[in-house]
Image 1 (cartoon, rainbow, N blue to C red):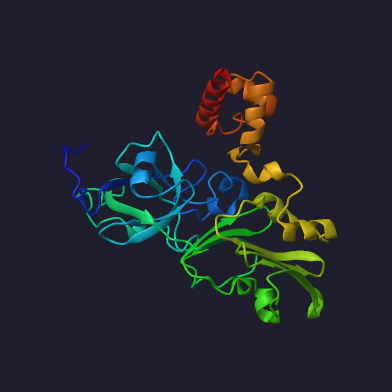
Image 2: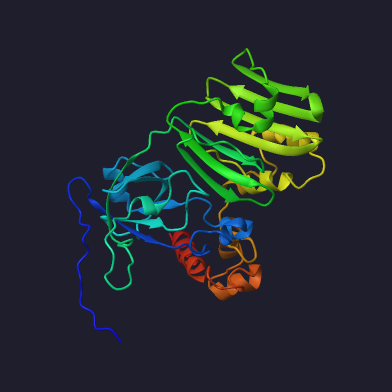
Amino acid sequence: MVSLRYIAPRSNTSPDYPLIANSGRYRDQWHTMTRTGTVARLCAHRPEPLLEMHPDDARNCDLGDGDIARITSHQGTALMRVSLSPSQAVGQIFVPMHWNDSFSSASSIGQLVAPHVDPLSGQPESKHIAVSVSRFNACWQAVLLTNDVVDLQDVPYWVRTTGQGCNIIELAGETPIAFSTLLPDFARQNQPGIDDTNGINDTNAINDIDLLEYNDIRRATHRYASIRHGKLGGALFVGPTRQTLGRDWISSLFGQNTLPMPDRMALLAGRLPDASAAHDKLICSCFSVGLAKITNAICTQNAVTTDDIGRLLEAGTGCGSCLPELQDIIDTTTVKAAE
């Protein structure tokens, strides 16, 4: 047994670094995700590293929910998407510990932590980091779905996660780039651009590769898809804000031997067979149960306890790690219904 005495953190707030960042883990991930990061079901609950902050702090930093923020400490910077949380203490933010250079361009908290270590364990002050938070002024955001190796060295923000049939990569930048070159088939074929400001191009290329392209210059919207030997080879969706798409549905298309014409058109149109799927959020990883089903069970099937949810949907009856979140959903939904 070792006798210890309290030692105050050496990283303190200041006018330049007014917030304290506390780092920790996500429910379904372990350390640096070398194993859990390759499992689609475990990645679906939190596919991106989120900077959780109180709405008052976000307002002071001119940030909204879903914006990308630049986190700066004495040591370096990181980029993460903002998630507003009233339960987060004012003056403090939470950042996840898992992402590294294999899964993101700039979301590793190791770039923020000062080299102040515990004299016995050698652990750094990773739960007390003085930081400032500012807006990352993204002029475009995109989602890339592919199994190809893609060169992303010129993209300042990217986060890769494992989907059902492919890698799903969220991207953003402060200056435009040649978007179509992010898909290797487009880069190799040197696909000519579209002359008019709105158009769809479906070109039969050599080697049985179809390149699908849609551009709306006025709305700054671009969509690309590559069909190899009838199968989906890659898809890219670009717009001025984060793309609202059914990522799981698109990812599942990679497993089809032939991509039928209705699905090809749905890709280019940005419309999915089930529009609600684009907004659903996975809650139970064990049984793949989303927020929409849980909310419906509460509102229409009188599910008022986590046991009720488990009986109706099986959610929470596996590993049980989603039970606290299920209870929060029940509490929030029943209060809204009472109002």
